[in-house]
Image (cartoon, rainbow, N blue to C red; front, top):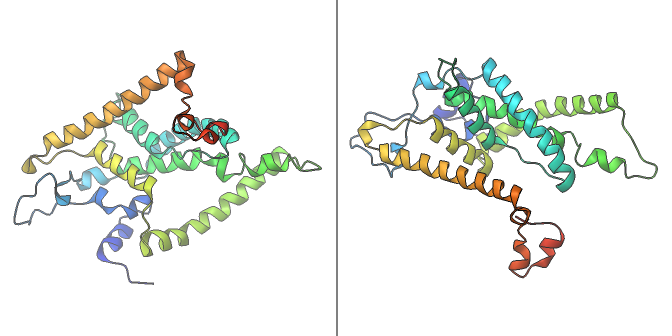
Length: 262
């Protein structure tokens, strides 16, 4: 195993042991010793965070907020998973909802930082993916289809979930070291969530004149959210818009047969 570099050692010392370890740009610092002022298009000109932004990380409000958002996503994943056999992680949704809850709600005078948002969405994802991780959308229903059917009682399902949790926690540590620190595998969902948290919590650096670029990112995000909301709202009143048969339109009717619609 290769020795860890200075960045990894610094992250370990700060206790930053979540998925953002694979995305150091989210907590990157702007080096004031640069000879030239970087432009908005360069990698070093991205909005940066200070120590004040980075602390604390795991707080009570982050944990309870993650449980709240994750529980709602858990119910939706149970319904969605029994239909499709798969679930959504909901990391991006959790990051956005958590940011809105604690940044704009009255009574929260202490700033909701990016690392705290990482903790919130981590708890939310762990809760939201319970139907898939616990086998409730695959293994458990399949046991009921056997001849004779195998039906687990409430306590048996509880023990099943506890066993999965036990092994999952201890296997996560070596897997994280191998996949993130050693192999540095790019995780699309983690990268997208890190970029979103970077945008939500970033403040433009006046020295680099990136205010307009920062506002443009926010406008793009808000327009995408508005378009998604309007499409979902239109599909509620016009059911035809909620079941667009894209596969049949492009000459792939098999996709429509298997209910792969938009």
